Length: 127
Image (cartoon, rainbow, N blue to C red; front, side, top):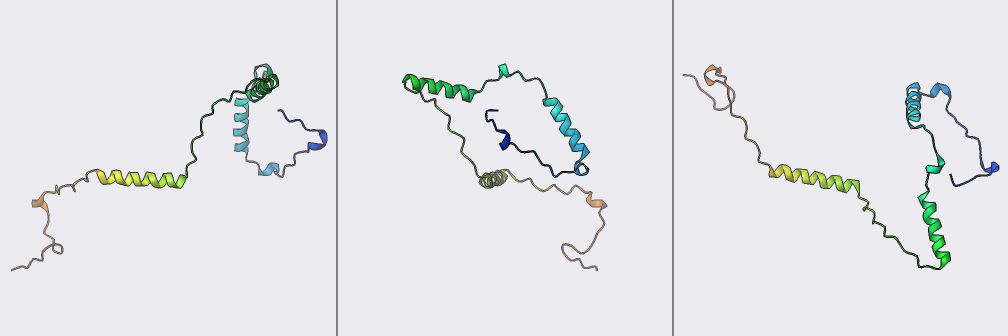
């Protein structure tokens, strides 16, 4: 909104997309988004805080007054995603080690109804 271009700097937009390549569903979604965002813009309500701060700074400097530097909060450090993911996995594995392991469920089958099957366990010899 601030930068103005002369007529020789402005070029026509050339699009390589033909109408056959456009997905009608994507166009419908785009139209809905645009309709939701569309509205009346009143320029009187718009305030450019950057321009206001710059104007205030230049007026202060022209008057010869000392410039007050506003404190700026330090940005959050940029984190390496892989390091964070590895740390998270290590933490999960430590938590899993701390949790008591569940005992195997006891055999609840009715022993008197089980058929004798040879093969596992001790070998049985028949008399």
